[in-house]
Structures are given as C-alpha cells and as structure tokens.
Image (cartoon, rainbow, N blue to C red; front, top):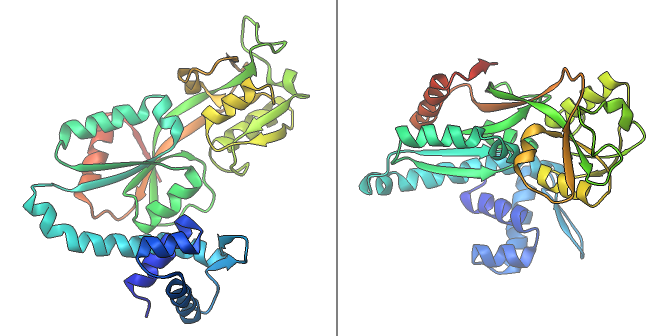
Length: 302
C-alpha cells in the first residue's frame, strides 16, 4: 500500500522535475528519493516518470496519478488542520481555479466580491490555471470549483457546469496592419492568407473551439504559426508582428502597445465562460458560492 510519503514524493518530483531539488524539498537524500520512487513504481507496476541523464518528465501513468496524489495529501492536511482552524475561528475554505480571461472581463471580480461579502471569514484560495489543468483538479477534489471555457470533450461524469457569460470574438492586429485603420468590423475571410496566433488547446476545447468555428463560418482554415496559453502573451506576439489573432473582446482591457483590436463582422459564434464543480458537493463554502451565482442570475447547465 502506498503511503503519504510516496504521494509527497510524486507531487514534489512532478513539480520540480529534478531529483536533487525534490529530495531537498522532502528533506531526504537523492539516493533515498530514488529508492522510494522505485518502490512506488514497483508496487504500482508501471513507470511514473521518464528520466535520463538530461531530463525528468512525467510518464502517462504519473500524469494521471498526480491529481489523485494531490487529493490524498489535501485530505490528510485537512484532517490534521480541522482542530487548528476551529481554534483560530476560521470558518471554511474555498479553492477556486480560474482562467486568465475571467480576470479581464470582470467575471472573477464580480463573483469573488459577492462571495466575500457573504463569507468574510472564509479562507479563499484563488489559482490561475489553464482549462485543461483545471478539469482534472476539480474532478479529483483539489479545487472546489473552476472558472473555465467550454466546450471540453470528455468532461468527467462527476462534474457539472454553469454558464457565467458568453464573450464576443474580436480580431487582434498589429497596429501597422493594412486593416488596422478600418472604421467598422472586419470580415474574417479577408484574413485567410494571414499567419494566425492561437491558444495551445485542441480545436475542440475552450476558446480554440470558438476560434475554429468562427473560421469555418468564414470559409477559412487558419494558418497557425504560434501558440500560447495566455491571451496577454498572444497579444504580445501580435504586437511583435508574428501574426493576427482571434481573441475575446475583454482582452481590450489589457493595454499592450502596438496592437489594434477590432470586432469581427457577421459573427454568430461566442466564447463561453462557465463555472465547473463536482455534482456531489460536500463543502458548505461551495454551496454559498453557488448561492451567489443564483443571486447574480447565472445560468445552470449540465
């Protein structure tokens, strides 16, 4: 049976990807860490890390086990800290993940402000995290909820979502682009020969799905030359004249020099932002958050 030390090893090595640093973090020698990892892999029956003299990386089994390992450690810490939290008068805890775009368009601000008004003594932990990382963490219980973009293929059965808002799609152009001075919306078809900068996600996930759907409606296939997980980085690459990018309207709230934002013409596609949480809830703080959503007239879906 694996013990807490094994799970601590998995998390530390997955985060550091370096045997020496992980061993120092755990307070053991590097040979001890190597022995413990071998014991763990022998017990499970498969490699958890790929390693050679030059690099360490998570193997597929290790990647799948990581959210569960974090959940085991979280439950252990929670059991240990219950008496301490009560003694200090701390009432509950809420762990909320969010994508960067939620902070651009005010969704995160509105939700956190409403929740904090109702629960000023609740410990609130906010974590900026990409969509593809949030879903496994919410499913495993390491996050109570996450602000994400839909769609997401293969959504775990234990999760439900609530729509928070739908954003319009805009185009980001270098300020000296031939269309940057246009007075009205831009026809996406006019950009069919341009290099595009896009998110790192698959064409069926999150904002990437909305972008590809908009391009399909315009009859173009985007020539994607660069990818980045954050829209602020995407806009910076546009400013560097590496290409154009379809972005959510709210990115206009982040000032980046040498970028021009214009609406797209004849658009029938929107980029969804939703809250995701486990179907079976055990945390009263999460129930309170959902009450805030009800009062803010956010829509529930499943």
